Length: 146
Image (cartoon, rainbow, N blue to C red; front, side, top):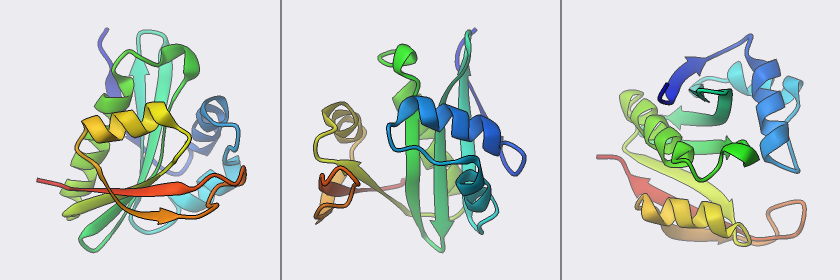
């Protein structure tokens, strides 16, 4: 089975929170996921491979701009192309919702994610000092959606 991507909405907060908790040390709770899913312009995507749910992404679209709120791949499923597959699906979702540009933040210490975004055509447009709880800076990246 190849990877399949499905959209999800309210009612999927438990699955999204569980995936997020496995992907990140600083994870979002079910209540936080529910709040995001109830917000205007927010979409969630789940990538499933032959072993089940493997990755998640959330985006928010406002007018002609989108923000990738999170993208995570389970640690034991990384380096299989799931990250780029889900990123491209999130870009397509944003484009369909009317976005012309997608923004995201990535920690300056997260080299694997920064590499993924650079390979996908994202360029740094700003920096947020001490943005993350661990004190690391966030690189603000953007890419025009064609």
